[in-house]
Image (cartoon, rainbow, N blue to C red; front, side, top):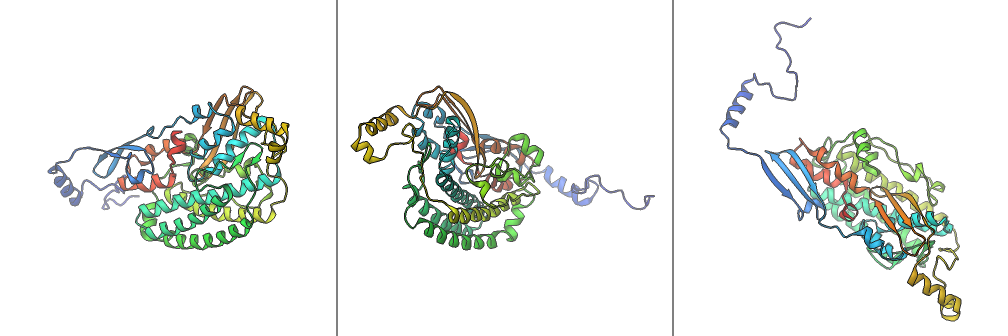
Length: 421
């Protein structure tokens, strides 16, 4: 039986009780304040927007009442550009979708084309694709963690992350010949083999990256300011994340154990031992922890792949698919003709359509391609992971503090190139 002398609890404990004197004084003070709703533009040049994205925010005080994310400033016509060149000439366009992990875009597109052809690439090429993808997974996650730390006041973690990222870029540049826009893959395999001594240099780089990541984690994971800004902010439930079409570390932070490398293995992932980290709360802190843990798992994958990589060819020996060796081009008529037809007309991909997906750094990178039997794609569409994740930001931040928008936008890791295509 309730105590009649004890005042009844307020139905919402977190809301001030209007019967208290403190609340009455606060209301009286607010009544004399001149206030009105405010509409601000974050972007398209705001540093926290990570690209040419505009967020139209409706504020009442520090509370976000509505947020409308506007894209399109970076649109480059990816699909139509691909449909006007040969299959191989699409690769430079795929590089620019996610400029933090271009090799994953290269290889994902090629995987779909090879599936349409019915082509299996050599085992060595599969290992190298895994190695390149996991290097860029670490690179992508370092970019995300570095930006998050810096925009919440942590400049030292940013510097450590950039040092680690530069080591990866050095190895990628040695492998592909370019730091950013690699165009390294080819239908049927790869452009070139591993340089001499590259495995040893990569292992040495991985040792240093591991040390730097320990520094980053020690500076951020238990930092009171960082944790207070991240925990309990940017929350989304597993059900809502699935409804929006979330994939990758953002979905796994909600407690959903889904990773294409495990659920639908491709290349040689089923021959490698690694775990898939899964979060619980679906907030910014869990999304940060996902990246930290996934970098550790990528390190495991890389060390295994570098140790187990077999010898052999790195591209199929079929002149209808791969360019002939230079001696054959210079010394035989068959080589000259094959080279000319592949360059000028493109690979003749059988007519049909296919959808294929790989697990990129930010989630499921899906490709829907259609061939009419010619040397150019009839249709290319990419299901990039960033767009459905970005589409949920408005609902996540509405009703929250303006300050919470910054870490939320950081941890979803929006990449303008793939969102706007």
